[in-house]
Image: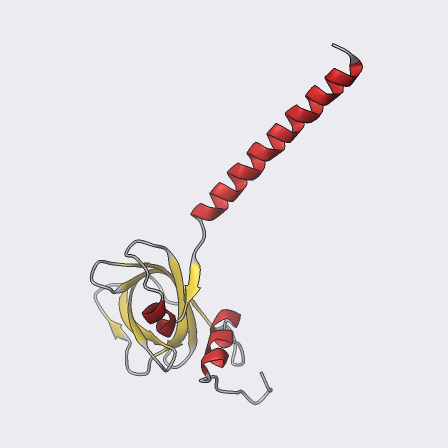
Length: 148
């Protein structure tokens, strides 16, 4: 083999290695992808049971029901549609009615969203960006005193 052929073989091997690494990375990221939806979005784009998504909106007033142990049922709304959520675990300290929330999980066969994580706002003026943007798009955003 000449020097030129050796160099081309090394370059080709490196490209194959980088291509395989890139492919495996995208495959792994694709497995962890969870899409963000608001309740009204689910009417337009139905989600199959078992598909992992993020559901965001406001915790509907009067919807929090505590079950046995750490089981909690509540509803997430975007002021247009409402989705019932079941969560088994400890809720964030700042979780309460009419506050922004992002839940992550899947729908069961009955159409109830089973969350495995719940994220709530962390101070008085904060709402998760995805939730705020979607509420603004739908025209139901309630402005706070700081103009956000």
